Length: 132
Image (cartoon, rainbow, N blue to C red; front, side, top):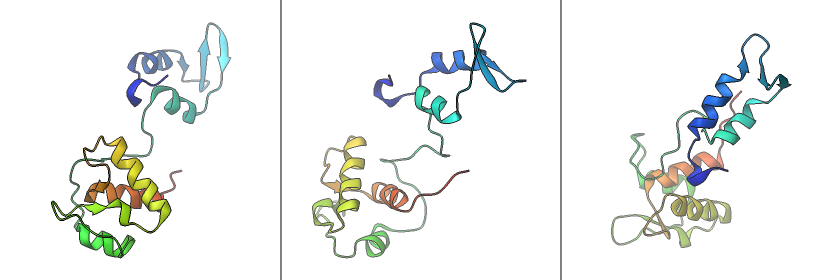
């Protein structure tokens, strides 16, 4: 339903057209349909928790790779080239799986190594923010 995990603008435009603002319901062919916002995000592929996650670009936060590694996985080793985190040396299984998943989803050419941004995203997943 979601090719390449991209939003479907035609579907989103259709949902906007059939939304009845006064009744806060969708009216499709004369039938009322109550859909929660979660369903709209799922159907359209839109990201609903603020900024879209960044898996490949540098984010400015002031926390270096060494600081993050010391906080999350002090036992881990860095690669000789580029100072990336060697995912296979992470002892926390949950963090290891998250990092492997994130690097694969990011299309990394070295999915066994994580960069600072990917480690930060894994940290966000391990300590989620609750949105109301």
